[in-house]
Length: 128
Image (cartoon, rainbow, N blue to C red; front, top):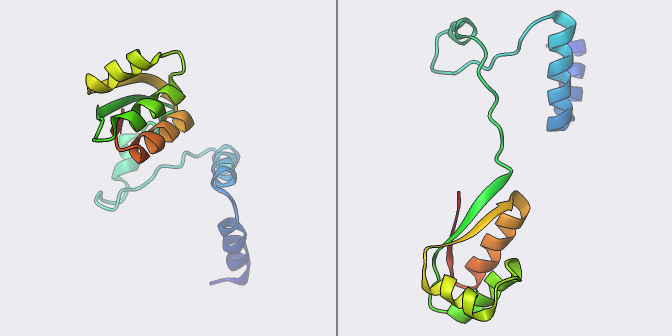
């Protein structure tokens, strides 16, 4: 490979994903082109003829559902009250007894933290 191309490739490999995204946008604007991912299964040029695909958006909010409280219900009730402090002990116990129980919609970070803590307490949790 040409030394010039090798240098460019090395510099690109050191970029973060965000920087790579900005680079792609800048190249599209500069050369008035649209970057389209090619599928390995599709013949050459088929994706370009079909048009650009919509970007996949990462989900930022999740519905947290306790599907099974497990055997240590007291620990699960305590974990639920960490994320739902407005619930009294009776309300949290009723949620655990009525599994599957919906804990509501949470931001991604809070939902993953809730799932981790609830699973550590012995519950089975789904994020939807």
